[in-house]
Length: 258
Ligand code: CAA
Image 1 (cartoon, rainbow, N blue to C red):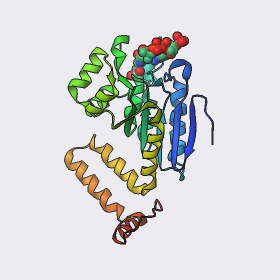
Image 2: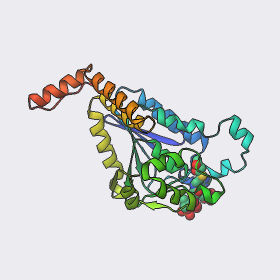
Image 3: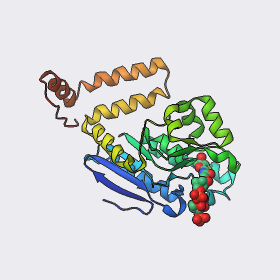
Image 4: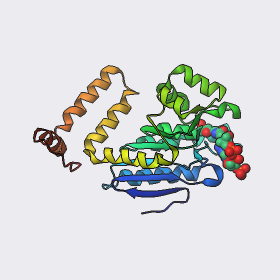
């Protein structure tokens, strides 16, 4: 496996784990870290032995946001011509499922990276926020869009306009977080869930992810059309035959991910 400066990679069974690793700066997302994260996820995405991924940080911080010190002297023209932050969205082109396992702070770009993943599992001490307004700016990697679709306008406005943080319980109640675990169990539980996903038919898992993500972008009619075509397409897989035969024969399916 390739090694990186700002992330650690590990594989457990069919699960690829990427751990953000810039402890001195609470995993602030400097450009080389984002490059490492995107490269590590892409490598797992194209690895046939991996069926799902977990992205995590440290106990204290998933990530405390974009790197403020790297960013502070940037100017509009270079931001615009170089399309600052555009490369962050690489995460959203990963086609296998990604669970964000968030302990500690997920602030600004950290919250945005977590929301680019397919679901967020939180440790009980997790804190989510979009505090860019306190720095004289606004979210720039999807916060105003993804947070609003997850928690609704009022809570999104509250977080983005006041900079107030949400704890894990509130984030789960609001729909930002799918499940909460004790902080020290979070990674194991996230890997366990990712292993369950990775045990299913890979093409069906990928189609399910694609269908859910498209629901955020397409009209209902277009989304339903896409879903039905993808559903029909699963019947071209060996795994659909195996899954349904196993049910009828009262045995466990043995998916070949084909
Ligand atoms: N960028 C750069 N460095 C950061 C950082 C960030 N976002 N967050 C923390 N650090 C650094 C600190 O500067 C500090 O470094 P030094 O030891 O060299 O001084 C180190 O990490 C530890 O941080 P603190 O001493 O501040 O730790 P704390 O426990 O007292 O506070 C915190 C923790 C509340 C998370 C605080 O660090 C903080 O408020 N961080 C900034 C959060 C923030 O504003 N994030 C949004 C960034 S903007 C953005 O993300 C734009 C976008 O949409 C993409």
